[in-house]
Amino acid sequence: MGLIEALILGIVEGLTEFLPISSTFHLLLTAQVLNLPSSEYTKLFEIFIQSGAILAVVWLYRRDIWSRLDLVAKTLAAFLPTALLGIVLYQPIKIIFMEQTWGQVFIFIFVGGLFIVFEMLVRRGLLRLEKTIASLTLPEALLIGTTQAVAFFPGISRAGAVILAMMALGYRRAEAAFFSFFLAIPTIGSAALFDLYKSCGSLHSFSQQILPLSVGFIVSFLVALIAIRWFIGYLKAHSLSLFALYRFLVGSLALLYFLNW
Image 1 (cartoon, rainbow, N blue to C red):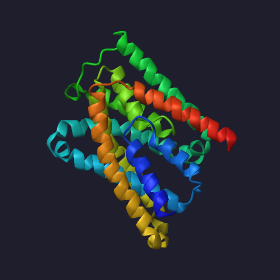
Image 2: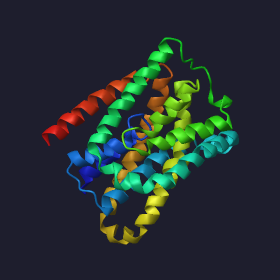
Image 3: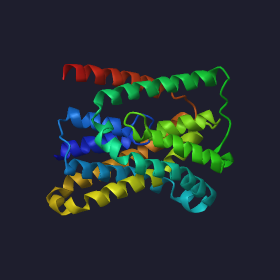
Image 4: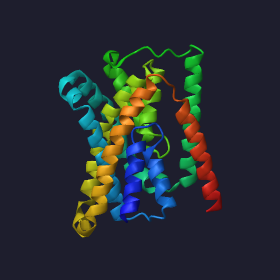
């Protein structure tokens, strides 16, 4: 992997990890467009750039992590069902679903349709978004964490699943996005540590390729900082419709790409 590919993938990860558009789908699609074969090194690279994105969340919300212990407790409660289901689904997802390109594209487009449905319910007054994080209960946190586990399937989006679940419970969009960032810390952090542990045997063999890893990590961190701040501000005044349209457009282009591939 060259520095240009590392730069591109770092940007893609930083932009998409915390937006409701599925970072996994984008990384898999970008790797295919760049003609990057799956290897032990590319898997290690993905761990590094995910870690960069997570570090951005930790940095931005470091004060909340230490001062809002009630929120930390609810975050850990939400993480439990995700962790349990992740252990059960880890192998099937890695072996089967990562290879189902067509299925990923259709799921990607379908979730965009769910965004439209939820926003339609909000406009018609059938779904009221009035609650804040302060009113989050432990049973709700467990339900949100269970819903997040569905996002292990590429194309769904962890952030998207959390935001939709919280909107269904009546939470404001920006509040839901904030909690999705918080929940990402144990969710993605533990997954990255687990993958790193499984790859530790091959770390020494990639010592000559540390520069692309470093570039990907730093770029992902910096871009994620910008994306997180923008996303929270955007949702305070806008709906998810933009991301639905994005999913329809990118999903359609992906279908055309694979049809001509």
